[in-house]
Image 1 (cartoon, rainbow, N blue to C red):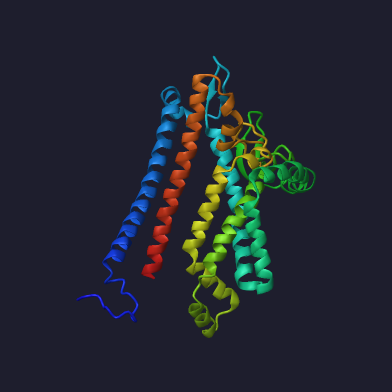
Image 2 (cartoon, helix red, strand yellow):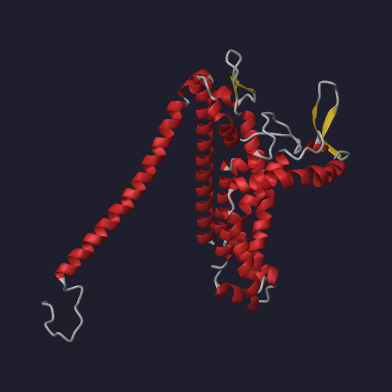
Length: 344
């Protein structure tokens, strides 16, 4: 087959050898760039792991697994003790509070935007939600320190304290004096403070809300209209159809929640400014605490002797491994959800 010589016909790209060679070159360059990006990402991840393991090697040898079984954190030379347990607890409890409050709010907001609000209102609400994601964490921290924490201490926490301190349902422990601690009264032990786990959880709630809301909104907008119209045609109510949409989009919603949780685990500055920064474990939401990222930001520049610096690298390694394990578990659960949906 030969190329056409009729000047009135457009050139055939499949018959233009020079043009095909150029396109093949572009294809190869694109594939090489994509492969290079993947390899670069993997290389950076390996380098970060190597640096963290090298920096924490002294602590790994001298402290070992005791790092996870003690809450003592005393960097004074000669009497130094290093344990990450209280920081793990602080990270876990603030993340749990953020998800407990933020996930229902985020999903409800996404449902309002996609299935309730008129078009003239859905647009501005979506814009405001996305605007929350663009606010720097230090701005959240300043707002939390000067506005939210005083409000909690003077208004919300006194109400919670007066409500829960006399409700004693489940015994959860006994003090050396013989006094028994009960749940849920133990959640408000110590009285209002404003700089505590509750404040840390609330500031994280505000910070993860736009992430989960935006992704859930986008996922719900992909719900097939055919399924929705079919459900209405079979006599389903609005709420039943909404439940169907949530079930259909559950994989995407779960992914949004996991992204929000990753943001909560790694957040630093805003939490530092409202959590109280103490290395103690307490069941009370009114007690001060500390997170792993918080202790790194607070003390890394003060690590002036080798074991102290190595312990800080150890905390960073634990934080990175925690994020990695969280992502692996999330990926496994998402794969399971996809398999169940395909089977159904």
